[in-house]
Image 1 (cartoon, rainbow, N blue to C red):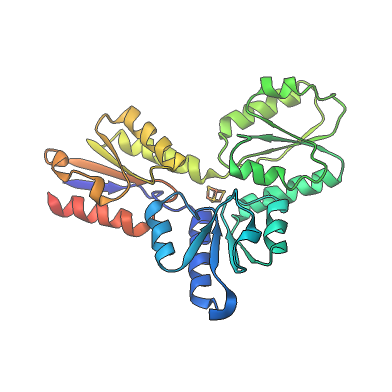
Image 2: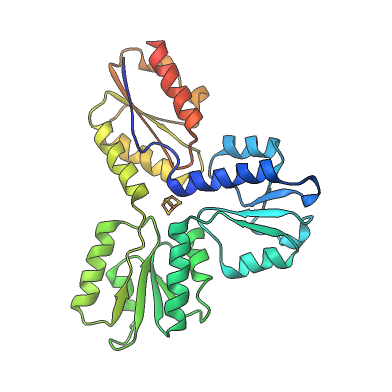
Length: 287
Ligand code: SF4
């Protein structure tokens, strides 16, 4: 059997960096420095989170008051937090290790600067997503709106002469953003558009779609609560009817692949390499 693993399978740059920062903290953390926490699960992968827990990394629940936890070191996740959350953690006596992805940090800087210059901030993205919540929390004036379409933008009734700055959630669709900016400009608004989309997600999805179209069966590895993995599964299943969504090797009934000639493998942004390699090795060795 031929097995092809997508080049973009697994951790993106920002997630890889965040995990490396947790590992670095684990190896350098002094005995008297208190517990190590991640602010929420570091990634949407139960296996990784419970492995870290077994090595002493606790999860600080986002709804909890940081002051309710013994002082220690809190590692912020790749999708970042608001200034208020970060200050709240420090004020509760914890050290902060900021593992916010530099691409997200750049958006925090842009919205902060343009807000200071008196621009109204508009974000393309999902208002309820933690990344967007974090971005909104760096806009001191609070003058900020979230939109998903040009129709949403029109509903804001921004005067055409008002200065506005448009940024995007990192996972927003490139094409949609381009179209939106074109429409806004065509209709005479005074807007500074900053394309802050990260291409990692799109590249992973495009490669998965292409691969699923060439194989007889497709395996998508990802955490059950990971929305990007679920999306990857949907994309592959739409092209290849024999698509499996698994969290690790133990979820896969390998006998279901017995008559397959070519298997494709991809994985969501929160799937570690060792899990991908284990699946790849087992599928290859079995047939
Ligand atoms: S998807 Fe992009 S922006 Fe988000 S963490 Fe990964 S590299 Fe950073």
